Image (cartoon, rainbow, N blue to C red; front, side, top):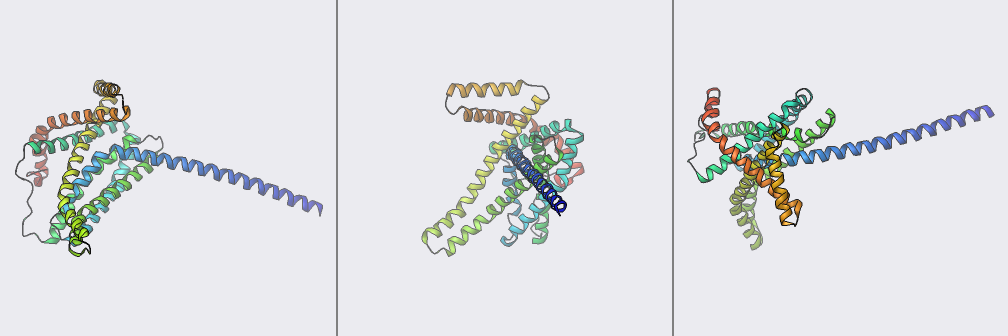
Length: 337
């Protein structure tokens, strides 16, 4: 009997030891998981910030694709585009980005700089058109096109544009990820893809329905102040879209210029980066107040100037050489881009 009790006592000791080890492992796993999660979120936040210019441009561009459609179809169309955007980022671009990082990491910087050139061109083109406006020469949809075909055409155009912008977002995000783990990098890119897509198309959904909401308030509001606010919303929407467009243009030039400057530094041409860094530090030092903020503002402004200058140089190259060449393969591009 005493032998049985001793055996049970040993078994109990083993169980307690095992439970203690399992508890320690669980605690370590929780700490590691929390650390990995915090790292993923932190990297995703940094990557999202780097892609800010493209994100704002995406939010500013997309509402035009629902202009002229029946009000009841606006949100369904936004959802169609958003669903395609999720697919583009998560199913096509994310695996391609990871493969690129794993097997051709040297190609990330040139591709990133190519995306930066695209941002600079887009931003500079918008600035150029402010001072040199021209009649709209893009593709004009025939008036005979029925609502279903018009919607299908708009969705296809929006998905093509989204794919280009999504590719830029994923490339910029990949370059901002600071992780040697393929799994961790994949998680960061997935978080960025989901978060940015939800943010962009959630914002777009709000923008395209704000005028409808304002109109409804102006008609059925019980209070005079409510009806007045509704009318203000309807009148303010065009101004809001203009503000978003201006902010988007500035962000494109800033991010595009920043990508080019940092890319040149990675490729061992340090002069532009060192010059901007030196000027920003000197200005911040001379002002002496909020030096970090002043340093960032000056750096962003100088990056934007670089982006604008490069974009203006690219304008004739793109419009007179690249677009005519592409129109050979894509005839629908002949009238605009």
